[in-house]
Image (cartoon, rainbow, N blue to C red):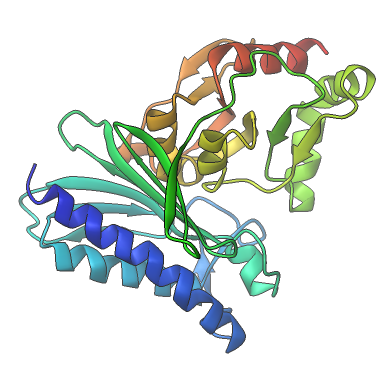
Length: 294
């Protein structure tokens, strides 16, 4: 593929740029202005803010420097960069995940997450993520997933959890930050919650999720991420980490059948009624069983 390493190099620089620049913008109170609604969502659910646009525009600038022809599928827009008659790569991204926190002045869970795709095979070939607050970088390719801490420039391979059943040590992630989300999630998961309280009371539910869920799954911090009515724009940017780490991502039917989730650019503004991303199929099946039966 043309200039692959060059593109990856510029995406790496983009992620490092955000880790340095976003805290400066925060201290200057820049980027908290609301621009408008996110496609396919109500304004009470999510909005685009100034920092979202800043991050996406900066990403475009770095991609253009690579001189690659890219179709960019962002949470907030679709952009064609380079020759409109040729596509070298597709990129799915959430340029700034955590805008709801940022606009409220909460200095937590600010991320940028992206996956690069082969436009012919429609398979991931690379992924990157910046955990801006912790100053950590994640990179995924065919060799696996690496974590780099910016402070010491040290990179190491990381692995997903090998748990196959839910236990008191498990951590299940879900985005529960809005009243609507937590009401819907808990209503769908009432049997699961009752079973966990009775049988695994030390299990924890990490209540912040979205695109940033996939680097943590690939690191083994969480065992699963489960959401209902999940926007595809929260799934697609992190799929490169699932591919590189062996994490499984499923669309689940009402009766509990697991179907592997597939990226489809034509459905980028759609939602998945029941989504589970889990460290392996067995863990996903156990989570489904408890959700349906308790």
